[in-house]
Length: 300
Image 1 (tube, rainbow, N blue to C red):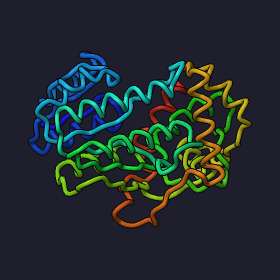
Image 2 (cartoon, rainbow, N blue to C red; image 1 turned 30 degrees about the vertical axis):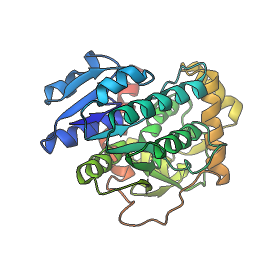
Image 3 (cartoon, rainbow, N blue to C red; image 1 turned 90 degrees about the vertical axis):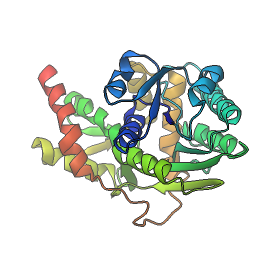
């Protein structure tokens, strides 16, 4: 039995699907029975639990041979630092009690740093705590910038006619599709060829600047002159709050962007075949981003 936290999310859903396809038993942890129905339809076992509840997680991890671990997003949290600490403590307590042998963690580039990386500092904290769990072999997958983060650009283009954000236009960023992270995590759990505590980077298919991202998007929607504009922090903060994000969470995201802009948060490994994944940004735009843009256009 494999237990997948965040089983209805972008990466957890893929991990569960890959394991089920390999003939493994999967218990998916999610926030509601309704959201777990897709997993049930594929033969998975649903388990409704709050990842901040150690008692519930202990029941979820009982009898499992491997687990996929993550801190679920909580964009409206009034105290995101306390939330991430509570989740990491709950995961550690449950794993220690159930004596799980292998686990893979969704982490991030920059998790080697103790501070100054916004929400990624919480992943550093999680890694350190998991590394101290006796008898647990743990693999932390430090992923690059999610391609899915660019889905928000569909609405920005509709609103102001350009792509925009807090990152430098010339900053090369390793971009990865969350599907590829899920595949990598599932393969690692199936192989279980890691011992002790290890960290591996996942750098996506290639590095891209936000200027290059805009060009690719522009070609897809027939706007060959589409450009990217770096916005001041105050404007980004206001926009994030307007879409429902709490100010503390928004401030952490801005801190992460600043860390990326100055190189405080970056990959440590040279790009290799092992840390390069399959999905190109062009493929992601064609298969996922374009649908989001067209939906926005139709609704406008």
